[in-house]
Image (cartoon, rainbow, N blue to C red):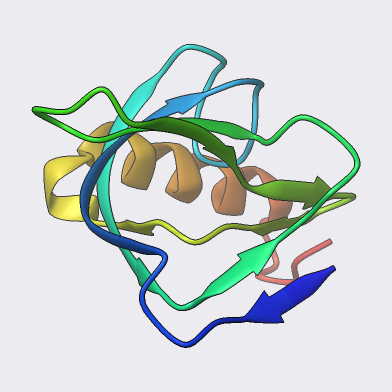
Amino acid sequence: KATMTDRLKRFGYVNIELNRDSILGKKGDILKGQEFHRSTIDINENGVFNISKPKSNKKWQCGYKYKNVLGAYPHINFLGNMKVFCNLLDIIEKACREDGKCI
């Protein structure tokens, strides 16, 4: 369930810890990103990410994974997360055959 609000619900830089393996990396990996949004989402399971604010005690869960789709609020800066970027490239390479057709 998603709901729009009148004002920003989350704003600024965040630390992202993966709660489980995904296309972004392995459980426990830490990523850097940012959030800015005015909506909230309620899901019936644990989020894919544990989110925390640098220099703050604020923490929450975020992210939803269904089959090969991953949806989440944080915007990930791949320049500061080259391990994630390389992991994505590895997944793409494994999914494509030598003839160039992807499976």
